[in-house]
Image 1 (cartoon, rainbow, N blue to C red):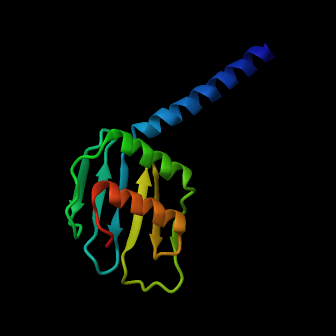
Image 2 (image 1 turned 60 degrees about the vertical axis):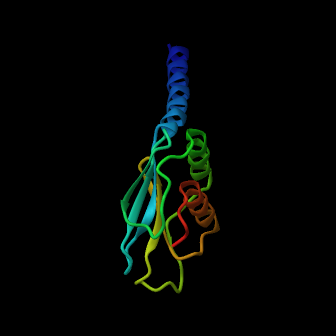
Length: 132
């Protein structure tokens, strides 16, 4: 009886781990700029590569990127160990950048997180957004 219960728990754990991986592949990426004195915007990249924009970034953005590139970006976000942070010395009237995937959103106010900056730059380049 205990062996059957143990096997059932292991099977559920393995199934859950597999679902998490496939679910990440079906999750859109969100990133943008908000707060401060600037008009914010939000860019959503669907797993299919479709790009949607809410608000007005300062530059033109591609409306489609390759699904393989989206998967690379999703993996990069998930493995970057991102954290939200307010950087020291940043004025409150400056906007914050954010990156979100699944139920998690990471916001950085300033330029003190190298991992976040790298992810943000890769996302911006993928959709053709110049850094603002």
